[in-house]
Length: 585
Image (cartoon, rainbow, N blue to C red):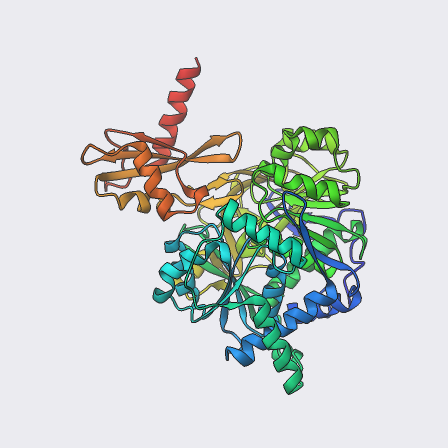
């Protein structure tokens, strides 16, 4: 049975012990009749076939559109291309590396319809990071935007990728607009590099699949009709709670359950077939993938895709030209919009709710948003490993200082280092159990065992719970740094810095930053002189995605260590706080 009316505007009731920090949603989410994501895609495509599904909106207002019927037909053809022309089999991994654009949902849905496993790849990744993810996932095919073709060309021979499909930001724009936009990107912005890749164009691949489907009278459903909810759909890469880059193995059931949970929480506020959601968060991020792409496709929404929200003015034409009713984002995105005159003077009159996640929502931002826009920001909490939503503020009953209460069918506990539930109001590590929790880390049983214990996901985050069952984030158990909602792990940055022969050791920490929430700072001890802070930053830019690169490098004579020689980041952080406090006095 469909879950279209599982939840109305009233919040669900949590059940919790008076003396213990543990909450279980009293309402259990009802499963849809879908056993797989392709089944959901096909059903939504048929129901809303004449409506616009996706629009890519460029900063200058240039745009392209696809209807639900077009997305369904082209993703069918792409599935046939993968299976019949490339010879891929069910379960084979296919990577997608591109920003938000019309090609992304078509490619992603086609991969899932082919019975293959989708591997989302951050387009900001460096060559080294790309090669690691391709090889770790075992991806044999890749759909990549032409803006990164030169990076791929440099590493392709050293990866598992055998087939490359090339697309562009302007894919399926009208011919005139596409020609103008490509000229601007290639010659004016110099954003499309020259390359010698042996790659198939996406539109050509779809045409091949379309012809093969007709010639063989293929039923694409045969590729996916035997998929069950426990089968893997997505490898979503994350540092997890240990900082090692690995793929969270998310099943069709994990993602559908989270879609159902989101619908149970927000469904009473979503008018099927009429909503317009702005997707400025990248769809390769699990938050936008599950909520914006899957959940709102299921509800027949018009999804307006912004390829890059930086600078924030890139979003202006989307707000100007479309009746945006929903938006998802992180604190820095909302804060940036509130600092724009065009947004505050002419706020979107159609906006219903903004959805916040990825990083802590500042109370001041939430309050100012309500004042300016007149509608709330509803904050949630989750991880890549939980598909991602674990907790959410009931819409209409939002709290600016809380991550909310557990999603339906979800149990949340706060425990000490021994796994014992702590008392009410006491801080403890957040652990969660529910149908959205990942199968495990791809090919990493030991690390899976460290994170999943008796079905409970140990998040590494520290929180408290109020008497009425609302949770609050206190701190992170590990040293992970959150930059605009993206995880940065000190080990990875320190490893990049260590590749410089003049460096003896380093400690990387996160410090508060008004623009990005936190900023990466590196404290470095040199073994020989001659290296400047800018030299280290420049080197890191070749090794790491831009958001991981240290914003500041400070040289130290030595770093605090344990008796066995391990650098104590917490002591470095404490000394930084102390020095800043002294300077302000």
